[in-house]
Length: 133
Image (cartoon, rainbow, N blue to C red; front, top):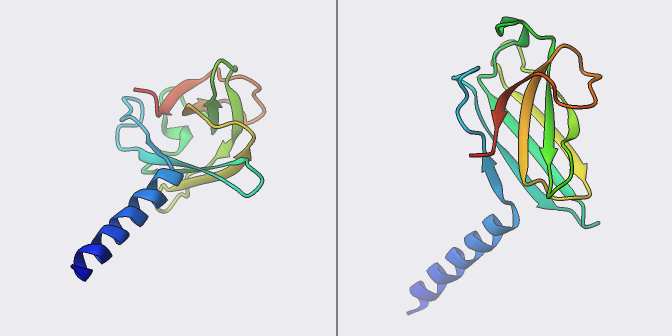
């Protein structure tokens, strides 16, 4: 009986922890088919949202057709327009990229575009990865 209680407690903790950090996976891309990744969102002590974007096998933007200069990460929340979260750069050796930022609103969708420069204010390039199905 004690073993069942311990197992139930552990399962409850795992469910509680995983529900606090929702995970969104990027949908496979036709532009960069090998790229995979996820976005984790959690609330911090100030009730803001920490958005952690992790991508693997993200080709250098210069290798795209047409070649681009950089990747930019965006989020959509509710009915708000897309908001720029920042620039993401794959490491040349392992093609991994990561961006962590804090936002006041929880993202419903996160996407990455290939842009000609990092100073863009609105997404205008190709959408390389998105969490939207």
